[in-house]
Length: 236
Image (cartoon, rainbow, N blue to C red):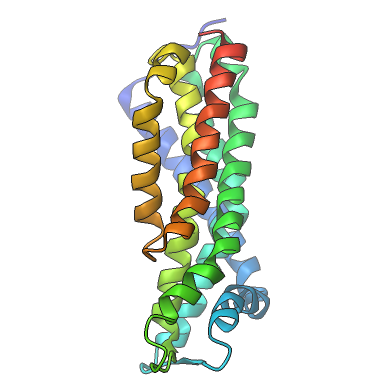
């Protein structure tokens, strides 16, 4: 069976409903995260207290704590809804795929979810070291941070790691679509190293070479793993 062509308005209507489903999933996840906000706070603030055990947080505006609570809820909502978000994206583009391409749908969506959550977890693991460096530049400075500024930094940091870990899936998909080949990936290793190092430097704003390498090494290893998957699985 072949898919029937649809009008632009039909595609827009489908996109609208998929966005609605994504929004509902995020809201439900945010409600769950809101209920467990105290536990999430303890997890997200632990790296700060590891890096600066004698310091604390402060709020200088009446709505700052409420804003932090909403950020925690939305961050938790996005993490919990990640499988649904990625599935809705796949379901929207699914009609445009061939039967051969569709067989990769579940592995691709599963890989996206696992890599995103893995990236967030990896970012959380290296966060204490990054904070130790940033908060220890001037030993005589008291690091009583604004709680809003801390959460803005930490949540961006974790999301950046999560998104950075997704690139192997898109690289694999590009190979599956015939845009690139394993031979081109092999020839482009030097460029891959450069892009990985630049990307790692942008994601880890500490200026610490060790932190940069901690991120750059797994990112490049994922490039090599993707190369071998393209060569052995796709045979391209």
